[in-house]
Image 1: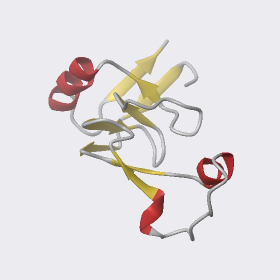
Image 2: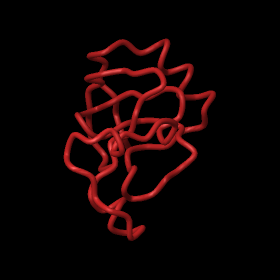
Image 3: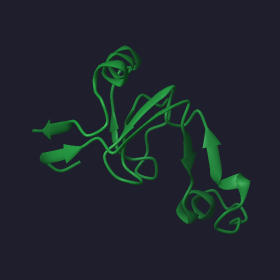
Length: 94
């Protein structure tokens, strides 16, 4: 994530991660259609996520690849932020 100012636009508990085409092609799996349930992966982002745009999350997911992306923090840190930071809060990334 590039340094700069971001705004928390959405918070989600037990979020689902939307797997892009690259997730399936890299694993030689059939690529489901855009809205297929197979694309939504439970647990990939951890228990809490703060989204700074539609697809970029600050999370503690057990998986961290370029496909998942975002910013990965320890579970305890993201849990504290989740309850302390309201939607609309500006976050500075250095």
